[in-house]
Amino acid sequence: MEIDRTQCPDFFLDYILYITVTKSLSSRTVQEYYLDIRMFLKYLRMMRDSQYQNTDNLHEIPIKDMQISELESVTLQDLYNYLYYVTEERENHDRARGRKVSALRSFFGYLCHHQNLISHDPTERLELPSPKKTLPRYLTLEQSQQLLQSLNSAYPERDYCILTIFLNCGVRLSELVGLNLSDINFKEAKMRVLGKGSKERMVYLNDACISALNAYLQVRELPEGSAEDAVFLSKRHTRISKRRVQQIVETALNQADLGGQGYSTHKLRHTAATLMYQYGNVDALTLKEVLGHASTSTTEIYTHLSNQILKNATDSSPLAHFEKKKQEGEKENQGE
Image (cartoon, rainbow, N blue to C red; front, side, top):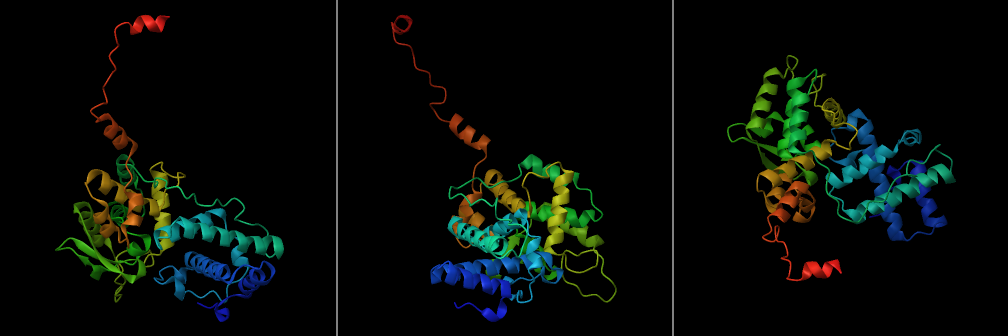
């Protein structure tokens, strides 16, 4: 794939020229950095510009007109959110994420220290993802119940339904936002979602989801003549944006005294998968289908065990209560 110079802002093209000529990076590395930075710029625009927040295909977002001022306000949290995005939505693993971190460091280092185009480098404290497998962060069953119980919102039925679907179905943020009324089959208690790579899959709805959907749809209002098919609407009666859903989840977490602990919409997906695994006797292959993963290798990070389950497994060993019997004369020898 060649670099499309007609679709890149000047500061991005200058950076590509810099790493090609001055830094003498290999053509393969230049190509990879180009793709990684291009994706980040498109992601940034998707998250910040309301007209692109419901875009299903990231590649359709234009960046040619992007200004350097848009990068001045990039924070460390923005970078971590991006890494979460490529992990959850694009199923990037350690190596791919590590390369993206290297590309971001190179890019922002160039803009800040080499060209003085921005006043600070947000990657200075950006840590390279550890290659070790770590347990995904998730809410316990009690915390999940606390989150649902504590919700206090101006749109309680809608927001409660959003939380319920996240926690019970494990859908991605983009999948929830993209839901249409025509996707829901109440008779068969299932809904169609459009997942990564525009792949459709059926997600089954339990009683809690059906109840929450019914309660929300009873109060869902549209202006006369509107034919909006989106399930979840904003206060302007249009499809709710990804950023607004993230704000709803952040507010709900704060209300449940769970804010500031690294939880997010991504973590609610982790939570759903974890609770299914811990309480539903669901295997990795089944979780793969529920979550819409391309392979079980991605699903394996969700099938971690809680500390209590690990402890119970150890306690169940037939040797758990074995004690060595003292041999005759052992006590006397210990006293010598």
